[in-house]
Amino acid sequence: MFRSIKQWCIGALSTVFVVGAFDSFAATPDGGALFKAKCATCHSPHKDGTGPKLFHVREKWAAEGAKEGSIYQWVANWNAAAAADPYAKKISGLKSTAMNTFPDLAGKTEEIDAIFNWVDEQPDPSAGPANGQSVAAGAAAEEVEEDSLSWVWILMGVVFVVIIMAVGGVRRQLRNATREHDGQSVDDDLSFGQEFKAWAWKYKSYVGLGGLVITFSLIVSLFLSLYSIGVLEDYQPSQPIEFPHDIHAGKNGIDCKYCHNSAIDGKTAGIPTVNVCMNCHKQINGNTPEQQEKIAKIYAAAGYDPATQKYSGKTKEIIWNKVHVLPDHVYFNHKQHVVAGQVDCKQCHGDMTKMNETAKVQPVSELNKVEGNVPLTKATLTMGWCIECHAEKEISSGSLDSKGSNYYNEMHNRLLKDRKLYNKFLEDKKITVKELGGWECAKCHY
Ligand code: HEC
Ligand code: HEC
Ligand code: HEC
Ligand code: HEC
Ligand code: HEC
Ligand code: HEC
Picture 1 (tube, rainbow, N blue to C red):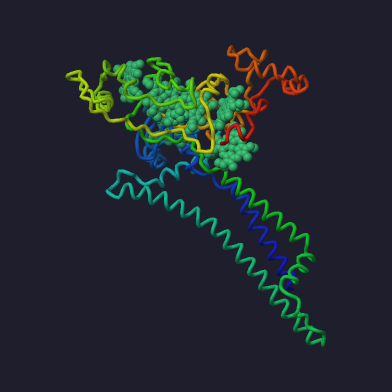
Picture 2 (cartoon, protein in one colour):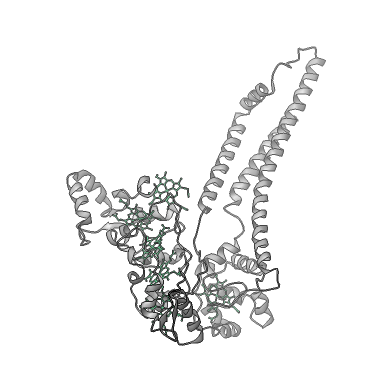
């Protein structure tokens, strides 16, 4: 009887861990993550932006007479929804820009609901004086919830171990009692550890399986947590001046290097000083009051009075918040990529000429739309991202020095001395960054 209890315990313990491990994969869709990955570029819960605010939007559609289910169709393909539902048609004329389509969300009512549920849970930052606090409290509550969740697993594990040990203890006492009764010697000298060893040996297949499951779960959760550490996709800090890249680099065609000139001859790309802004903005003070207000901040920083056209000498540095950040132990060099590797800014930063907000870390889903980029799956700015590109990215097609600069000549000559290695590199008809050392730890780590 006790044997079966023990087996039951082991079974339950394994189930707990297996469920725990798979839970992380097959969890209900994470609305917050989906929203941030797909919708946050245009929508926020409580503020109109490129797209309208989404707080309680399902209720709005229902109240204003949209067809049932039409909102789900809208999210996947607003065109199709507008064709089928007059209300959706009306909404499609709301803004001058069109919404993206999300074919991957077609029919995924559960995921879309998760997004809306998350949106509806967000506290309104402009509601009442406790605003900042309530948002912070919300975030904190979320963290606590996640924390306590992992505590639940640990606690359950401990409880099961205790049960197993207790059952083992009771069993030993009972066995000793029966032995005494039968007049046999009592093996009290067998320590708990020895007893456990004997027991583990007897049920080695269960113990082995349990151990395997536990190890597997630990590894899986370790990997998952490592992957989510420092993921910066969509990071968009607020900036002292709402600087639009599309107006400058897009509409007015200013070259990236005009402002980020050290990208071609240095490690960092650099952010322009206010003097660079003044090269143009001494003349351009904006057409609309909105523009003038923003440009006035440049004047304040430069200590320039547009009325008298004089500098007062009292300057105030504009402190831009850094958007793309790598940890200190990583070495990244712009010149190596932009000049030697001929990688376009777009491939890592997305198309900044269309960016009408301040800069942000583009998610790989955006980077994958860039022509010429290798298909990426790992989050931008993570190690996986760097090495995924290095694994696939071709340094050169045809002659190795075809890029014009003589950078690859030296490698070319070295490789010609080792035809065997050269031919091995060229097995897939191309030479990748990885093959020339782009996967060596020391190249990226100090
Ligand atoms: C490229 C910008 C963009 C993205 C990304 C985007 N939307 Fe939209 N969305 C819009 C615009 C613009 C509208 C307004 C309708 C119009 O003018 O076409 C809109 C309208 C909506 C509406 C109707 C709002 C209302 O007030 O009735 C819903 C619901 C919606 N979007 C959901 C989503 C969801 C969910 C996602 C993410 C899966 C998403 N959108 C991603 C731009 C976007
Ligand atoms: C007129 C000057 C100007 C031009 C031209 C310009 N930028 Fe910028 N860029 C800025 C300023 C100012 C910032 C800081 C504000 C911000 O982060 O939005 C910035 C920020 C950035 C950032 C984020 C920096 C960080 O902190 O991580 C990237 C990436 C970037 N620019 C890329 C580009 C690319 C690519 C181009 C060309 C398509 C370009 N820029 C053209 C002025 C310029
Ligand atoms: C191979 C990918 C890649 C390419 C190509 C690339 N960048 Fe970057 N960029 C990065 C990374 C990674 C960072 C963060 C660097 C750090 O924190 O040390 C960054 C940071 C920046 C910054 C912030 C300031 C700084 O130097 O840290 C600016 C501005 C910028 N890049 C502009 C550009 C421009 C302009 C181009 C094209 C001429 C370009 N980048 C090409 C990956 C790239
Ligand atoms: C090469 C010329 C040039 C440089 C350099 C330049 N700008 Fe501009 N900027 C423009 C032009 C052109 C406009 C568009 C004015 C218009 O639409 O009438 C503009 C518009 C703006 C606007 C108003 C955008 C809006 O919301 O409509 C801001 C803010 C701005 N610039 C900030 C900056 C900052 C900050 C810098 C320095 C980092 C800078 N600019 C450097 C040419 C320049
Ligand atoms: C879009 C593709 C792409 C991404 C993303 C990328 N790289 Fe690179 N990287 C290249 C190319 C192409 C070269 C080849 C230039 C050369 O031969 O040195 C290169 C070369 C390098 C080198 C020199 C390797 C050598 O053999 O000398 C280092 C170091 C490096 N990258 C670091 C990084 C780091 C760190 C990141 C992530 C933060 C990163 N790269 C992301 C494309 C990329
Ligand atoms: C192409 C560049 C590149 C190469 C090659 C590379 N790393 Fe990294 N590594 C990075 C970047 C970028 C990060 C920072 C990731 C982040 O912040 O999410 C990182 C982070 C790490 C971390 C911290 C854990 C983490 O995920 O943040 C460790 C440990 C590490 N690397 C070990 C290695 C080892 C060991 C090798 C050699 C087998 C190696 N790296 C090769 C770019 C590289």
